[in-house]
Image 1: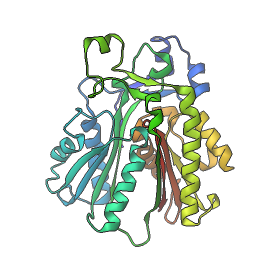
Image 2 (image 1 turned 120 degrees about the horizontal axis):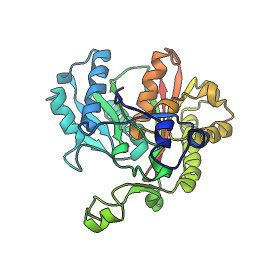
Image 3 (image 1 turned 180 degrees about the horizontal axis):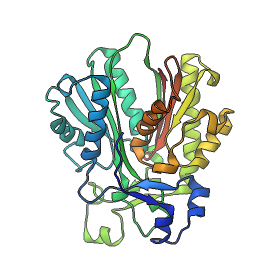
Image 4 (image 1 turned 180 degrees about the vertical axis):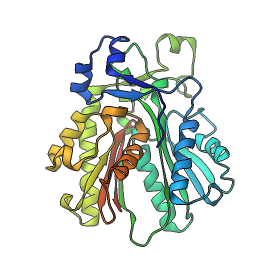
Length: 316
């Protein structure tokens, strides 16, 4: 994992917008987030996390067959941040592309990597979740600027007879695409002075509706991966969810009949919502803390703009 050095706390935000530490904590569970400086782009954090992942897995950059980068805040609209990362790593033998599924990007990416591995097409895949959403939030809008932080997480995926992704379940609902989006910068609404004046370059979110969709999508995904593999929730040692909001996760845990603190891994207080990076960052820290061991089953589950959602059932 990789996060910027700068820590922005709720107390710092109290000096910037009309909000309070208590208001943010009670509604989101967040206390701090990491914020990139002007010179840092998505590929920079992705590179830091990727080098650590390669070292930990004893895989050289030249051995990589594929680089997948899940992001909605890449260095440029195009070319792909994955191609920029390929150059930085020296992974000259790897194909590379970005995938856009917002906060569900890592879960979607893991499903794609699973398919590549199972087909035998690739043997060494680097998957990175990275987002710098602090660069696209309106720092005068207290409803959104308190929610996001910057970060990256990376994993190397290889074939294994017993371990790995057992099942993935993905979903989407494009009819609600306008509930969570950046409303200019694409071919529908190019960047114009009029769009900038209306602040359409910043992230927009309908929080109330997103909450409802998120609980339903995450719960449905968890239940489907268990059903498809004939497992029960009692077989699962740990759920690593997208770190969007503790109220959402409390609702999901309650509907699954689980204790949020005991069965879910949470680090939202430290990093806030890092979009596609939340799950790989949480995975890294859960492994460091010994929350996952050999033989354990884990569920990664997420929800994001698109709207998108999904889950992976993973054998460790």
